[in-house]
Length: 306
Image (cartoon, rainbow, N blue to C red; front, side, top):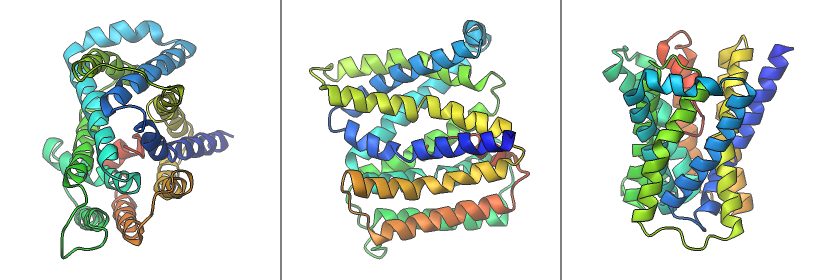
């Protein structure tokens, strides 16, 4: 029975995460990246407070923060503040069908950074995964014109790749976090909100945002940053086969591309599918012989869209 619930939670999380690239592009038609960060963070805070209250853990929030205040401040400044600000700007500059697969290479970035910061050995299959993954990145970014190496938006590509560094750094630091995961994520949003809100005021405030914008950003806050994270964590807690659940994430980018083409009419280039296939191949090779490694454990507990 637990395995059935685990599969249900896992599939629900993956399907919801598959919709966020489309939601990002819709939201960015109404809000700037910094406005989107502030509003989505506030929605996430409310959702995570409700979840922590339901789980009977909210009273531990202050004690958890006071145990390591500077640590949670650092985590919050990396994610959600810097990570989502960079990611949303990348989505503003690039078609979502390019930004999403580029960001998906974060797991390969994590392998390289784990070797530097955690002293983990890079195996032969990790090098193969890196080669395939970053070849896929170049294929997507150049729309298949590898020899020309011309990018529609060099800044957009750079920001998408920077987001992978920030996300990997966040989860490397998070390996040393022994607190409840819901409380840990909630603290990150709470400590980052003053910074993001202040930055939004510095950049011109808010003005009139139509209801469509509020609806879209609320969806992002709930299903990219909030509720879906809890579904994923529950799936991993209930299952006895973490690899089977974590492999569900490979469904997400393909569903996402279908939604982008269907809902907002983005053109999906053959090079995008080829590049995404290379990235997925690299990730599968990386997982195949690394199920017992610490890096795989870190990866399996993270969002497939980040």
